[in-house]
Image (cartoon, rainbow, N blue to C red; front, side):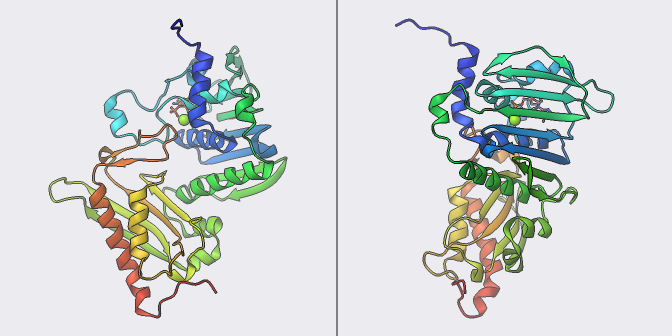
Length: 349
Ligand code: ADP
Ligand code: MG
């Protein structure tokens, strides 16, 4: 055997295997980039469940022409520059991997213009082969087009499901994002027809009852208990943790865990310990086998949580895991206490 350095395209395709599982992963990475760029409106056009086309247009800060080739380079990012930055990262992205990964497994283009005075330029990449930067008439902001996902990776393409299934994954992910960002307007079309629209404009708030109704339905909304509690992590640390959001009254329990949303510092994650704390808080008020519904935003000092655990960033690691478990349990138990005063509920009518 000879040891050799793999070509860039192959390295990117290998990395794509970790973060780009299906069209929904592409939508996630691209919309997160739009949000990191300060977009207030994001248009998402899909064809064939995103397999044939995903086009994401934003009105964010844009990329200047000379940086456009860098955007699709591996480990190139404008979001962090040092380990210190990584430890306090506030953006959704920071790995500089999404664009080169996506571009290596699709027919890809990125077009961008930085502000009103900037020049619009476009760059095409086909299966990792990079073209030349060319001028293009554009409004300020960025448009990324991803066609024929996995056209050059048959093994991956085989695992794509029916159009409806792929579209369902995209919609679920957008719901998750929409809950956290009521300030951003999202418009989605599929095969040329309007599919969904989340109105934006709830500026700066992570906390919108309107958005809750739009995403999870009126029934959740009328059964929602609002929570908002902040407490010191410990007497010596000086930092605080805050839990905000909505939890459903036991009367609105679910047969499955389909409406459980947790965000840590604005990022949607799964966390066993927090999920366990929630479950424990509901233990006395839900019948066995029923699942609580909740949308919870946990804010902690970014220096006390590691977001660089998983390439797709689905998980985090807390420094104060035990204190957080206790805090979530106590906060939700208190909120649920009032419902405990009446008869035990727990079965949907
Ligand atoms: P990351 O998000 O981890 O930085 P990406 O590969 O997703 O890595 O993007 C690389 C870089 O390209 C970003 O750091 C950003 O500077 C730029 N970029 C990507 N998408 C956009 C966008 N929609 N608007 C403005 N800049 C963008
Ligand atoms: Mg990114």
